[in-house]
Length: 80
View 1 (cartoon, one colour):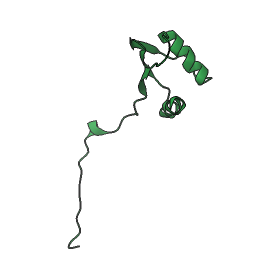
View 2 (cartoon, rainbow, N blue to C red; view 1 turned 90 degrees about the vertical axis):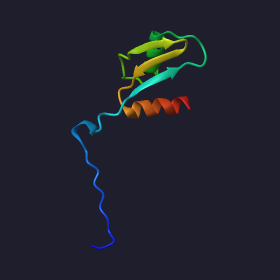
View 3 (cartoon, helix red, strand yellow; view 1 turned 45 degrees about the vertical axis):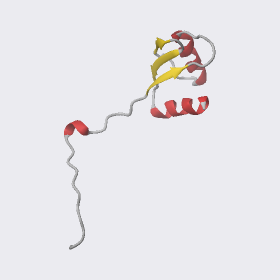
View 4 (cartoon, rainbow, N blue to C red; view 1 turned 60 degrees about the vertical axis):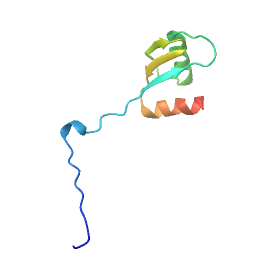
């Protein structure tokens, strides 16, 4: 029909969305925990979720993956 338009955005195989990234940088404000201490604290915050892998990145800064985006969002809300 005259006056209407159509837009086409080509999608290649490489641009398919992948699983959402659930990695996070955790910054500790008080205290000086180790990576193991933080893993224990995450287990305490979320019972039933074990085997946290926490990597120390710097002074009071850690890197970890959360089991899901829902769990990551839950922890963000707890810390807010």
